[in-house]
Image 1 (cartoon, rainbow, N blue to C red):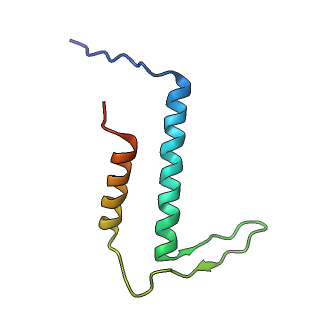
Image 2 (tube, one colour):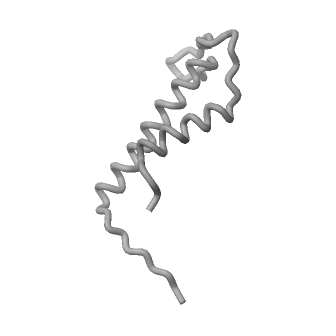
Length: 81
């Protein structure tokens, strides 16, 4: 027996939701990069440089950051259908 799911969302709503997920992920990655430091790659006209970490004495384990981002995403996006 095949299980079929009806998609009640339009293409525009699906693309908007995907853009929102990508945006929140990018912001979270940027914040984590600022706290832990980041080395930018070299491009054609952009010289690579290293951004010093904002938190130099405190080290946050990656799993803690993943849990926090998961809690934010869960409260922001709601329950899965």
